[in-house]
Length: 402
Image 1 (tube, helix red, strand yellow):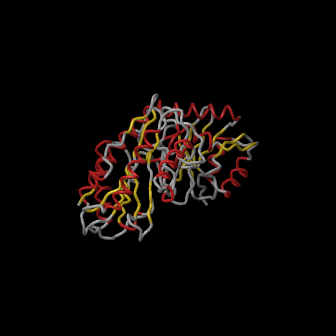
Image 2 (tube, one colour):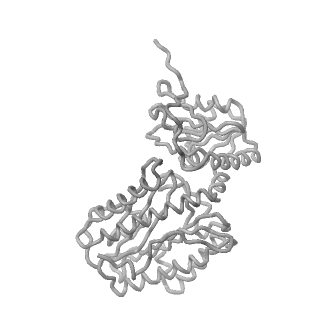
């Protein structure tokens, strides 16, 4: 029987342009290696989409197979499955090893060639499964295992100028989707038709602005009537009706970077009860944005908006926190949970952080003004305040349409 390799290096073609210059990835790796030095970690073994993409530029498609990034003091190596051939190497900063399917656990054998056995290994406690943790111990035989997830999250929360520039371009793409959705809204049109109009417009704009990128994962949640009650409710084939409350949610994804544009809308007109709730949510949105500046904690912002809504007898209709960080994250991977506007988050805002303000009020069916109201802007924290980088207008004057 012919022997087959456990792994190999398939450096097929030429390296492709990545979202950022090599110097950007080297700066991130330098920050990571400082964390490793401080924690005594010899090799970091990342398994999540967000950390692998953040430190290498490679965004994997798992489809049931494990992927990795191994970083030592001198090496940065992505670990990918043979089904992807040379694409992971072309789309990563650094080296790549391809493991084969012919023998179970070649993934861990490939990682071992970089880490060696018996070393102090860093891992992601919020991502590594129990099964894979056991295999890490079996194959790498680590002297100690150190959870690097909290420290790497803190690093990702502070955006570089290059990241902020990309996020700024992403928000402009979201605005394009918002205007396309606005044009598509009319009574009798289905949610799915409006959502496709927004998604198509954004994907075309992404291809225009980022001709060297990979294109995937851009989406729209466009909700109407009762379907607006949840922020993440999927699109349906419901037909819009005159007087419906609508929720516009446009999400362009560019090289693993996620942004959002979210707006309350109405078809044709908003009744007086709905208009009152909408205006109150807009007021909370504007008040919340005014609070976002260096030196204030996430919890402090949250409590002040809570008081604002409580004074108007509306706090009971709040369903989640008031905003969160933006960067390498998505609805199916990643989250910088240390930078969320919630009562239990004490992180202090600093220049270079990027955060949303997105108050939402949900009134149950049968009450006057029933439905979900949400406005969402993305802000960059600056030295003396913030910069709002969302352009599409919010509020009744612009968003009663169709």
